[in-house]
Image (cartoon, rainbow, N blue to C red; front, side):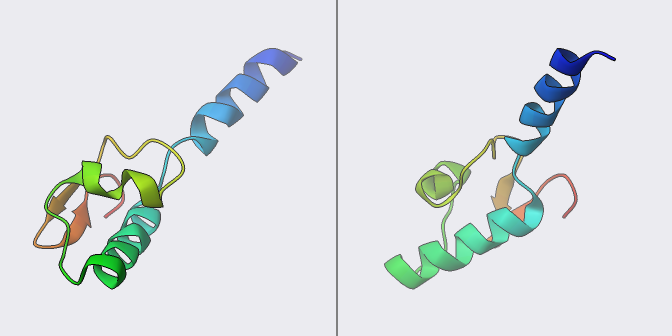
Amino acid sequence: MNVDGISGSTRTVADQASCHTVDGAVVAFVAQHGTAPTTIKQLSPYVKGDISAYRIVGGRAAGPGC
């Protein structure tokens, strides 16, 4: 059994954010700023993990799983 390979894959998946996570960050951004974000970079402070696969369309997350 390749324990190092499995744990490396687990960390990679854990570092990736979901669509639900990004939508939650949008809600937090709106609550703090009173307006919807226009770029995904604006959400970085609200999310742990990689959100680079997502974008903001009409004030909502768009990307994998959305």
